[in-house]
Image 1 (tube, one colour):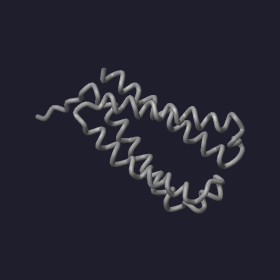
Image 2 (tube, one colour):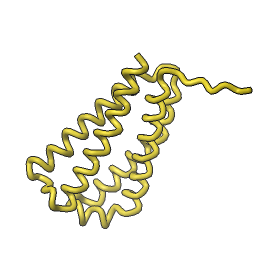
Image 3 (cartoon, helix red, strand yellow):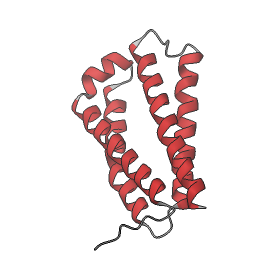
Image 4 (cartoon, one colour):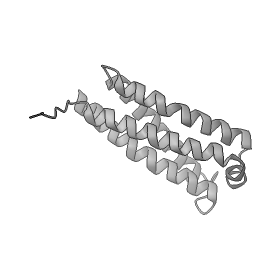
Length: 130
């Protein structure tokens, strides 16, 4: 009989992998729809495309980081980046730079909510891995 072993860093590793998949999938959508997204967001098409490419690149990087023998530091950095992204996106909406009633404001809030949730799970994983 095989025993499934879980280590104290399993939550963190899985949260990083999930983040990589979600962000990379979003990146593929951003690259495929850079022009329509730019008309919604007000950003130049090149910026939408570049953000999509960077998001795609994060996917394999996240899986690589999650596979390292020691994942705690990487997890803490990723959780901090997600926290900063949450503050930035919600700040855009609260400051009125991306009004909540507009498409850019709704995109900013959706990104802020996602990064708050995944960053929180990653931070919990960091704490458990301690």
